[in-house]
Image (spheres, rainbow, N blue to C red):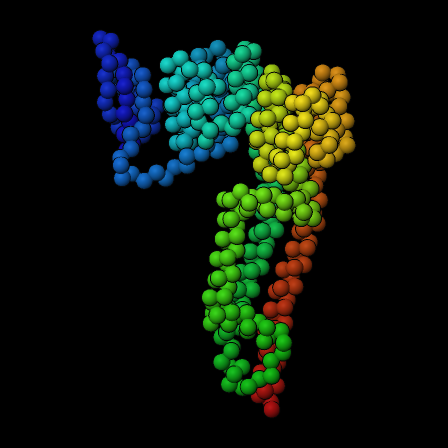
Length: 401
């Protein structure tokens, strides 16, 4: 059972510190209240040898639920500290629970919501903190939290669309590789001694399949080395700056895939920037934060160039148009928003446009890729079947001779 260290005030007003056992932090607080101890601070106590199995980074889905729940509490007039305590007690995500506990302590010590959130970058993105800070100044915290929750929900939906589009081809390819591996690595080698004994004249397809079988059995070190090199290459692209830059350039050159990636980035850019402008964040700060939140280095470099031009008085729409990242319809929306003072609305319209276009491209990708994968799998399995059948004919011919 988890142990919680606490600092509390007893009925006489004296400070008390200690440790209690409970399943959750909420049960620990209730246990202390039953003892007429009013907790000021409660945090989970972990031993020096205890292994941390929970994730340190808060999931986007959990952050979305937290934001929406907090918006409801704030609209109802419940103090933020009490609202966050209730949310923290009910959540099952350990990382979020710890983050909320630390934020509640900061708030009780006189901190602000945005300031306490800024201490937890593992939970709150930079744009989230900037929007919170502006909401605190304008007094529109409830509406801003609701807008943030809606944005996070739509971002999760967009990510889910992309993942679902790529998951089916991946699963089909894995099944195809598994089928070939079983046939070439297990079934065909069973007949190899028979082929050698009869000195059968095997066709090219069968000999090629036998070579593949030998490659994964006798010469296993070759595919193992290639696989290790592939994993190392993937790690290099994911962990190093040069690798990330190479990966970002590569995905933007892949047919069909590049369109999906581009529109997902543009949709996210417009949605974050629109949310920040609508929350009252100064445009230079909003542009800087949105650019930093862009996860593609190619886009980020061009947006940083546009940001520099904006700071030098180049306006908003023109520098973005010169990046050549945005289609003509979006550039026109930016121009209208800048000239009419409705930039937040035009950014929202642009994000909806990109979202719909992204969904359309994903559907086209899926519709095109599914039959291609079926044909590819059919060709692979058919080749293996033909190789086996031809091998049997070779054996029969050898027996006849």
